Image (cartoon, rainbow, N blue to C red; front, side):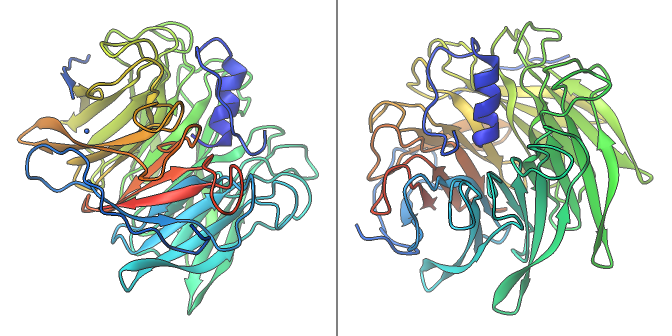
Length: 456
């Protein structure tokens, strides 16, 4: 959940029983399954979280990443993305003031010689006012193309129009290839971003956009690249959308760029106010159409189903977070629903909950899935165990023979209260490397400067 998603939850108000802090800028069936000094890469760790079964999943903290030039309230780790091959990390710091107050920045780290080394630091165009550049990030499979959202960027047409930037690797550095935007005052275009494996198709949400469905109904946009030029291919809205659905709360796109998963965490149809839903769109014969709408079986008001979404490389497995769901772990403990696609239909395969979860854990606030759909990383950024209130955690799950099992609970070795570890998560294509953001963590760079952790 980037600062924009925290904005959504503040807007909704009563949907949560706990206070969110630290923003630098302010037909289905299923079952439940139960896991220093500042430098550009440091803090190798050998902690051993609990695991079950001998399967591939990240279980051990290897590194803590903090930038050498970080500062207080940078919110480093607000957005995290790892390339498919696991060698390039894109990490947003949307509160960074280097390019203007709360303008934001994004760092590129490369895995080299057993550690992670900074390759570049990227900025948006503007240098005045809040951009939230880095609030959401995505990267191509080979790590050569990055997509970065700046949902708070303003322009001549109004405030908080938003933008998304495309950067490409050129030799030893990175350069801006394109700036993408659409009209719409206050739409917060770029609130969430996703990119196909080859880096040629971008999915960008404008979760606060007003359209024919109503005010704050939300929209999403498809951009495609041909011969180095980016053009808008489609505008996506829900067939049955309403005002304040926040369609585009989160977005994901398959590796081949033909399946889009779009969350609408405040949709009230059919399960009640703020119960949430998620939409599947597909590209066929050059056109995008809504294939289906997914909702939680037995969903209830304030579940937030669709707060986070992820999809496998082939577009057949989707993870959908419902971080406000009440379940056996308590009120607002949260869950994550796994849906699978077969014969053009989607059904719920299972529902994942944390072992030993508790009230207000917000399990499902962020989700990621491996290319083959067998490894899932799920954030629980208000979990108090073991590092204190709102310290946060993340969980690694694996699917073996159609059964999902929690493999490990991931926590920061040096975590402390209010870190919000697990607010953002990402995983490599093979499911062996995960990066977990803790945007609110204190570090030698200052209070709320933020950190990111690498697990393998």
